[in-house]
Image 1 (cartoon, rainbow, N blue to C red):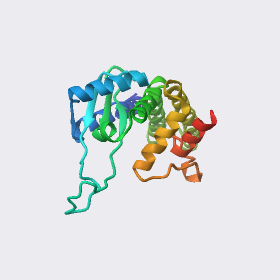
Image 2: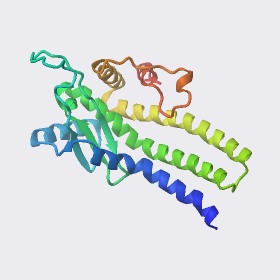
Image 3: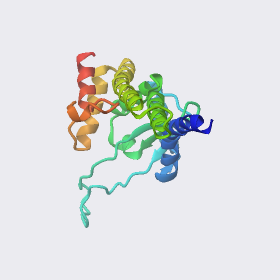
Length: 230
């Protein structure tokens, strides 16, 4: 009886780790604060624009001196802004984490597009899908370890679940982007992704054999899908 229950317990723990874990880590290990009145007003407008509903908003503090060389007192010293927008937590306890640089270094339309992208994930339950996929994979591994099912059968089931999860996960992400595009426009969303990538000095990656085993499609492919109306 205990052996049979073990995979179920492991699956529940894995699900909670994926859904609640990121919120706990962000709350405990990132330097966050409540938004100022001005930031709260700005975020309220952006959230309405993006149709993003959350229970709480937290500002992630960033180092304004990042990227400047030691001893450089020039006001023109360049730095790489920290652009991060993410919703953490399960339904009913969702928290929007926004770095300070999102409000100071981005135009409003770009910031709104990033919030819309998060709203699209919430509407398509992308995070919940990932949690379920992880829970199922871990549960299958547990049945193999406890010899509830033979190794060959467990490995075959794991391969099938993994393949389906990768494929469906990508479809869900594209659907999330489509929801966001309905709110702010496909071109505006693609431009926002490219703008953030440019600010952070990276080139949006497109799919290669190395990305076949990733639930989330590469940013370059997402941008291409938005521009092509897929």
